[in-house]
Length: 321
Length: 254
Image (cartoon, rainbow over all chains, first blue to last red; front, side, top):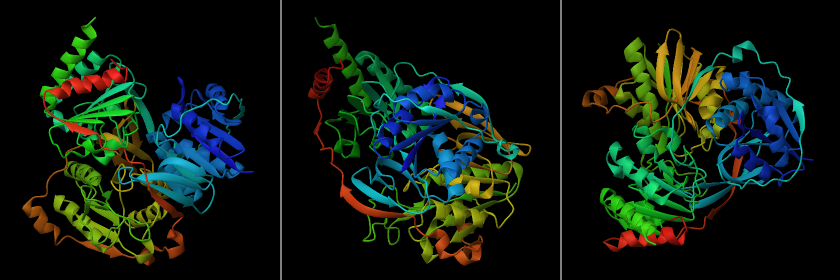
């Protein structure tokens, strides 16, 4: 009988959505599905992890997993793998998951596949390349477990109604693995709804020309109501807006009802994070911008002129009886 | 402070990539360059040695043509390079690549290893951590700011909510995001002097590795076209505002 594990990221506020997505997929792949949850909140998360398909949750609430970076979690996971020999471990694509998966690979000698958009068996997975224009199905060989990192929102989480047995993780973490520490955590406020949940995402790129012009997007989001504001990597790297607003390969993946791309050229890096939107509107001065290749409506216009007019029109319609 | 920077030669990110008959990305005979993400790691390395003294050694694995990426980083100011080229490494996966890079790094003394967060062609984003594990090093990843202290490094790591401050004693590995710095342009003097900077070329055997150590562990089974999102309408003029508002109304979001 094959066993598929999910490396479930947890926090005091509960399990990450990615863990529930991955468990939903995992239970279609194998009879034995387990989750590994390390750090404060792990035991408490077991109920939700069980309800999404984990029959076992290997859990430890030890704060060391949150306070020390990567190595304790990778070590504990490697020890558990040694004892239980799963066939496949699914990870999210988060920074933490990448840290742990990359290190685990060195310990187990396993193959590792990143950016998976589907998992088609315990030893095969699918990714998309060249701006997601092609599917590539890959067979995973070599020692078990196979390691696959899945892009966010590749699967919709569905509860199975199950319950999980909680198995405490009793792995000693050697002192030499505790040296890298998380010494502070900072939240940067983003007003409005969460990007991942918003029905409308308004997003800006270099075409806005100046960080001050980003406020145009806030005004548009406000006029629409319940819209979130995102950004491309280029403007995040340039320091215009914080990373928690970044959409794309290295940021968040969004699938809103409507995505409005303002001054965004449509680089692959960005497109993979938003092409799942139901409808896409793009506004760009350059009629040849690649973003127009996937927009339902592409508007060739200067964003600085177009956005205020659109805000006005939306407000007019909303104000109309 | 001896700094090693991992660099990769990638197909031109602005070009149109293609697959060969073996279903591997075509890397030779196409325009390629130093991975733009790696330029931030090179810049971070140069800033460290400018402040603390020491030298920047570039370490890369790739075909002969990858020398252009190393030369570019040398022209920015790095001091020397090591390129590992071997026919057995064609199509190497992340583990094989990590073994090669770790073995290459281990040949010289170092305090800090820097790399980009992920390559512009592969985007796996786990390789540096695998290298760190193989070398028994702590790693601080996804840095938007790097600060060197006495025998320690401290970074700000980008997170979903904001940022975390992480720190570790040296030696350590740090991955650098595009937000960390603005890479310098090579000066003419830099370009000229890069030509005479030492670049060592190694094969697998020089690292004590054999072909089975780097055997590929993944096979492409099939490549198929993904359903394309048809391009919609491209419009301009006064009508556009109303059309976009109509779309929002149809989607019931206004």
